[in-house]
Length: 342
Image (cartoon, rainbow, N blue to C red; front, side):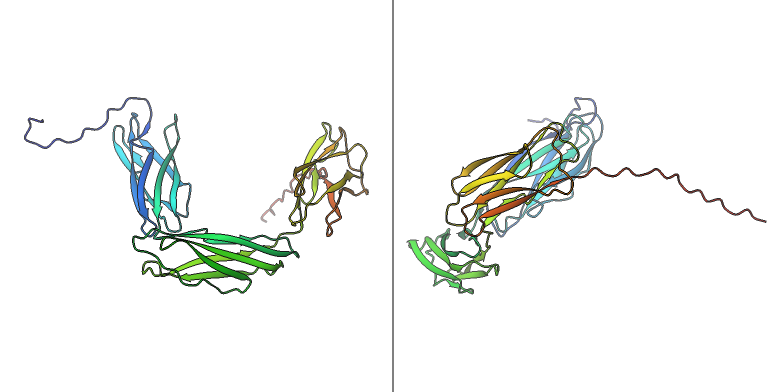
């Protein structure tokens, strides 16, 4: 116990190194269980254990949309402490989350430090997922069903009314898995996929005054029957002294498996190896150009692939070689002599 009649004051840390040196009392903070509707804040304490002024240059959140760096102590004297306050907005999150913040300082030994925080976001009603994406092959008949789980975290039993969609392209079926606690919403999209990209909003009324309505957004995003990536093969300019290798992807988005029967480039010495990464669905083509290969002017090159797909029996992928930039003639700068005053 202190024998002095005056209250004790915390003493400053003793500097123990050349230059500015940064030290955090903690680099990970746990908010614990928090509500999704209430932003939370925490101050990370930083100490300068060096012998020159420590400059906190930047504080960059890894999630700018949900994490904010509030005004922090930008200069910390040797042996003193400062604060870096961080605010987290959990709106839209559910369950365990973890975020990071990058701090840049004048400490030359460790100019960048990573701070982390975590939290368990409590929602009165969990909707997993709250967005549904259907991605059928364009022009094909589809009948796909996705399931949304609705879980109540409330103490009192939850009741749900019949689900409604503002788009008739989606049919709904609400099932009770655990009375008053857990439900399953089955959402089905049927019909021919078009570029219209229908979207909709599903609403379900609840017995909770905290969350009177549960919402689920839906969208249909038709995919091409056959996806090619990249759309063309680009070769470096000039003669390929060391040869060149290119990987081409062809994905079958339709429900019917596809076969690749032939693949070739209309140039001498170029070889194509086909690897069926996912049977009937994904094909990776390795195109190898020989040493000293160079495209001839006026002779278009292409990788031609024959498939069993009824809509794309032949796929042509252009092969383009970059041209060397033309030499620019040197022009001396024009010097204008001002007129002599008479």
